[in-house]
Amino acid sequence: MSAIGYGAMPLSIANRPAEDQAIRAVRAALEHGATLIDTADVYCLDDADLGHNERLIASAMKAWSGTRPWRGCSPRGPPSFPSRVAGLRATCVMRWGQ
Image 1 (tube, rainbow, N blue to C red):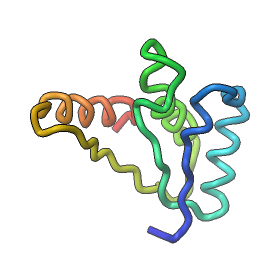
Image 2: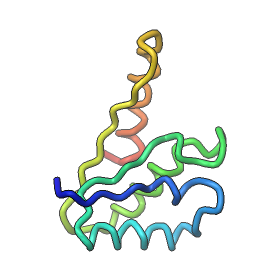
Image 3: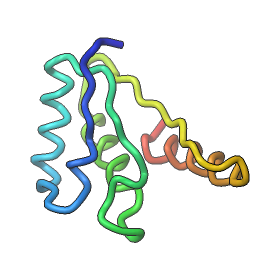
């Protein structure tokens, strides 16, 4: 992993860019050496939009032929919610298409 990462939250919250512009931004980050993309299921407008950021990153990666960035899913939460953590990990994998 290089020292270059990309924080993708602004692509999915209020005042976010159009999807094609957001995809171009992700690809530009990759072309300039980003090897880490920060994404989360909660980078979205509301509960109905949950997972927007991860779906967007997956769309941007579909046609990317370069080095795959590191994408990690390590949700943290109170120990009393282990099913939430397991569910988030499964959802991350599903949204990323892995």
